[in-house]
Amino acid sequence: MDETASRIQLWTHEDGLPDMVGRYFSVRDMRIDKAKVGNAKVFRCERWTGPLIVSGEIKDALERMGATGTRFEEV
Image 1: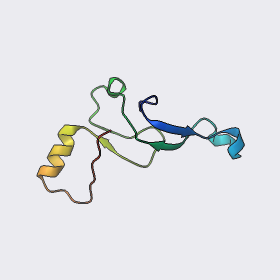
Image 2: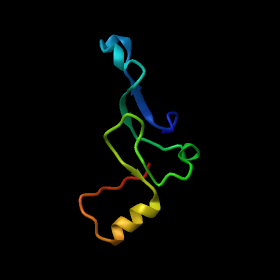
Image 3: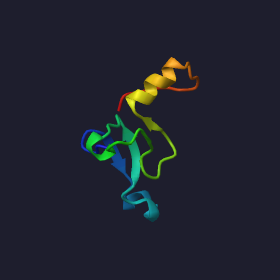
Image 4: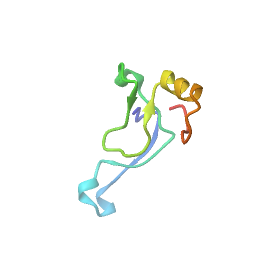
């Protein structure tokens, strides 16, 4: 993730969850640092169960085949 281009909030000591301090609390307007991705075509941000990030090539293939239950947003 490109932390400087994304809007992020991190857990702090004041939140009362010491195991979470320094981890992402909220991410809005996520942007990906393409230099860090390398040749990966599919990935998730570390420790996330949320969005699956796919390359434009995979997105196009899924749309051509009429895949359902997908939603794409450029990051």
